[in-house]
Amino acid sequence: MNLATAPCALCRDDGGLPLWRGAGWRVVRALGEEVAAAPAWYRVICADHVAEWSDLDAAAQARAMAIVTALERALRAALAPTKVNLASLGNVVPHLHWHVVARFDWDSRFPAPVWAPPQRGDDPLRLAALRAQLPACDAAIVQALTPLLS
Image (spheres, rainbow, N blue to C red):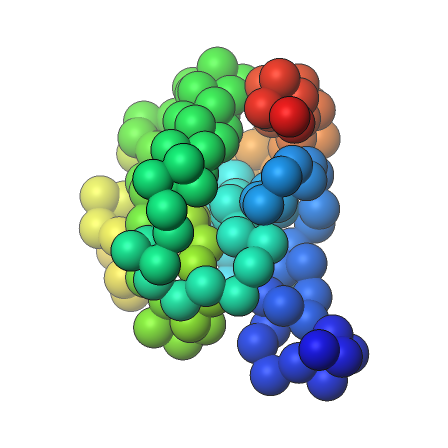
């Protein structure tokens, strides 16, 4: 398949800022307007074009959950969020991936889902402080995932 012309965005592109690649999976930090109000938004993306969780064998499912778990723990340790949201939808992009999003009680959509309409205005100072922490958080994520390379 020619990746430059692949119809699937996650086959064609990284899907965010690449942080880590291991056997069968990659982890990225999501970028762009979609995540402006929730900048600590990460994705665990299957390397193969797989649409559904049940398309994976048990070993691949276990590996995915080990990666999601390590990512969640790294987010909790680095950012101390109020909650971490996990989601795998694939309605718009039918390529298996997990959203792992650090949520804070001050974020504009909390406690509703990150995709819900805002319940209040953004807090620019807190968002700026969170964005300033992301490079160190990214490094902590890479460190937490490194043992899962093999």
